Image (cartoon, helix red, strand yellow):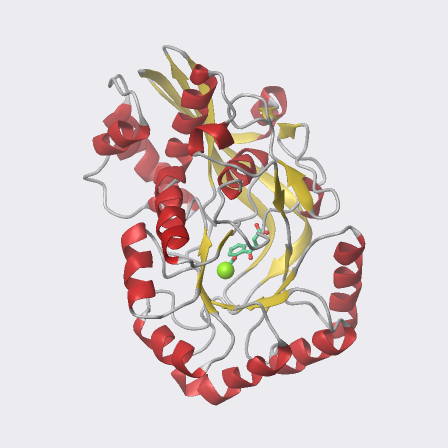
Length: 368
Ligand code: OSB
Ligand code: MG
């Protein structure tokens, strides 16, 4: 397979609801779409980097730069038969995983379409449907949060994740747990705490949480191990894990008992699968995290979530949780908290090219 054309398109969509975490606030999402043409068909990918460097060091603009000036030139015109060979062409590029994932997903889509198979099947997925939860941001007050929980439980979502931060943590979680004693509930701190908060964080042990996600620094696995040693609740790492090697080291250190696998944070589906395989081998549960992807990136999340080790509900919600109108047909739908894994070829959802064209704020192509 040979890529002879690469198009980058920057698209922005308003979120149906402002999303606030301990590290950022956003009311719209701008992602770079990657479209490739190969000698055996096309492929689509999505670069799900936030616009600001508050979740990770990358931004939309660094992704644009790395894709345009390094990744696209590294792969164009080269012959490859599988993703291992493709990834080798840009191996010299360190880091920049969100940029890499955008291109890599497009290559998986092209490969799956070429083989005439659904992406999930090419990855080795076994689940006919995946389990969905929702991630709820920090809200103005508890009543507003209750309203949202009520809505999503009503829609059948299988678990609720609450964003927490100092001032919006123990008391909020206690109230939610008192109101909903039985629901699957977890929290995500996005690195809002340090070991100085250890006694405070220990209070979360009282609420029967599935896990506490990334309580400490984005680049730490040492302090997380110290925290996990005194917490009953499983620690789940998000920001700290960029590769299967990171996952191995974190598990060896007992820095966590669960891993959130985000396709974009780890540089694509190939590395996501490697982390999955490692965790499955070690009996460590994983789930699929999200970055408010449009339908293209979320289709990749659906496909990877079909692997057998994704035993916990993920942040792969229906399109309507995020956008009034998504970029794919049909929109991604969660029925009773489950998304059916598509059986059609490639990503399994068709990008609406006309709408994408209309919405593109900036375009770049190689060759020009
Ligand atoms: O930490 O998981 C996170 C969104 C943007 C950046 C970081 C995170 C999130 C979410 C929402 O929690 C996940 C989603 O629904 O796509
Ligand atoms: Mg997270």
